[in-house]
Image 1: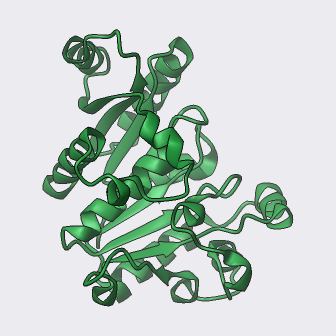
Image 2: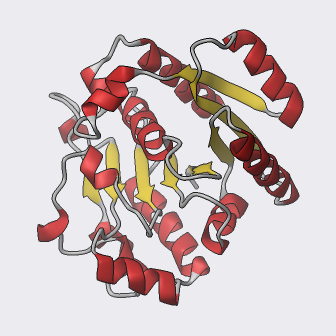
Image 3: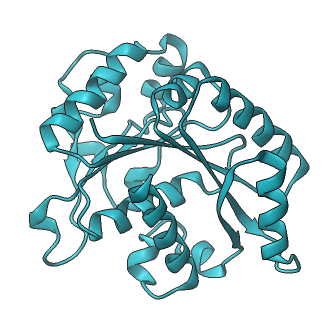
Length: 252
């Protein structure tokens, strides 16, 4: 079974989807076979980062969760760069952005065991090394289930008191679920902070590894989700730090 990595944040707008997507791309470019799942069914957006238009898509994650298709019918191979696309190293399972589907999934929910069986089937069929799951923010039933089946939790937070409290709750629950590894990422830290001291303080507070303390980068905002950051800026400090996190995931 491929290693399962859940990417979560307690609050909305912390950069969870951007981090998940860029990590998936970097890992794929290094030769890993990666599956990326958009499990944020209330506000899916990974397809936007890849420039995909889903109007012509035959099936999406929602269809699989409603038992309308096999998981293989809802997966799409992503072309990253010349010489990479034909290798098929990155696959995306997008979710429907349409309001009717979003409302239906919120109202009806889905069979969590069916979701897990789909992940297993996808990993086996595509011979995946790793599956990254972009979860819904907060601690919904679906998110807790994803944490329970994950090998690694990447937990994003900002230097904000509400984020700190929510992060503490998430870490405590992840430990109760016996999650093997928790990797914290502090995103958009203020430029006035001493990052090395902040990283040490956070690690001591939560007794977890801190993968990175990332400052606010205007280049991320300027892209406005129109491109993959690490492809647009391969030598940027943010790309370098994400590469280091990718190394941690491979070694986990």
